[in-house]
Length: 406
Image (cartoon, rainbow, N blue to C red; front, side, top):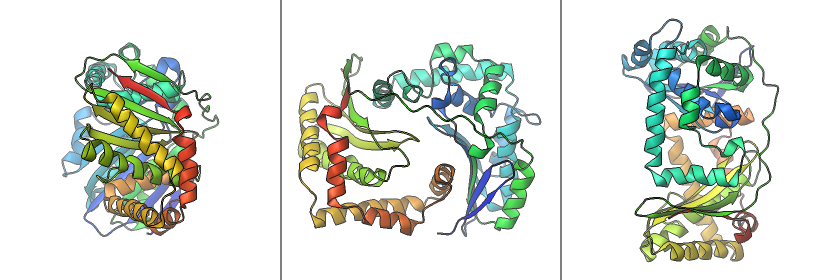
C-alpha cells in the first residue's frame, strides 16, 4: 500500500493514498479533544465541532452546508477524547473545492453569538437523547468511574450548565491554546496526482500561522478498581466491566486487540456471544472493546440483559475470562483467531473513508503508517504465551471495575 507524505513549513502534515476511483475522501485531523479541556471548558471541544459550520469570514452557515452538497458530496465532523476531525467525501474533480472549504471552516470560523445560542439548544437535545440510551451512556459513566476526577474520564458532550455558559471568547481561547499546527494532519484518499494535491494544500493551508505544541498532556491518576450500581428507570439491566489497558505506543496493544476480538469482537463466533447469546439466550448484545489513548487505554465488556439474569451473565463472563487466563490457546485456535482478525482488517481497509480516517490518525500519532503486510505480520507474530500474559494482566478479577444500571 503506497502512501505519499509532505510537511508544510508551519508543521501541518499531509498524507495521501492514491486510488483509482471517482470518489475521493479527505479531512483534517487535529490532536485535540475533550481531555484537553479545563474544568470550566467541559464540552467545548465537541461544541466547537458543531459551531465551525455556522459561518466563516466569507460564508454564511447555509453556504458552508451547501458547498459540498451542491456537487453531491458530504461534509461531516466528529470529536473524541483526543481528536477532532472535519472531513468530506466528493467526486475527485472537486478536490480544490473540498480543501478550500475544510481550510475555511477550520481556520476562518467566526462563531456568531446568535448561532452559538441556537446550537446550544441542539447540544442540549443531544445530551438528553443520550440519557435515553443507557447502552451508550453507560460507557461514559464507566470511563468516569475508572478515570476518577481526571479530564479523560469526562464525557465528550459536557453538561447543560457548561454548554449554556460558553461564549465566543471561550471558543477562541480554546482554539488558540489547543489547535497546534504540528498536531494537524490532512489525510486524503483519492485519484489525484500528488504534486497537484501538494500545490492545493500549500495554497489553502500554507499561510496558516505556525502554532507549535509546548505542553504535554497530564497522564491520568493511578487506577483503583471500583464497583458501582446506579438506579435507572430501564427495563433491561445494563453492565460494563473492565480495566485500564495499554496506551497507543505499547507493543502489547496488538495482542490485547486479538484477545478482545476472541472474547467479544464483532464476529458472531466470539466466546461471549456463543456463551451468553447462542448457548444460554441471556443477552441480545454482548461485546468487548479496547480503546488505546496516548498515555493509557480502556478495556471493557458490555452486555444488556433481563433483570433476573444479571448475576448469571456475570458468572459466565468471568468463566470465559478465567479460561483465557489459565488455558493457553492451541495452534489451531490461535491460527483461526489470527485469520479472523486479519480478514476483518482487510475488509475494513476496502472502505476508503475508513482508510482515510485511520491513515490520518496513524500518521498523526506515529508519523508513519504500517502497510497491511506489516500489520498482518504483527498479528501473525502473536504467540499463545503473549495472549495468556496479557489476559492475566488485563482480565485479572482483582483489577476489574464493574458498573451496573439497575
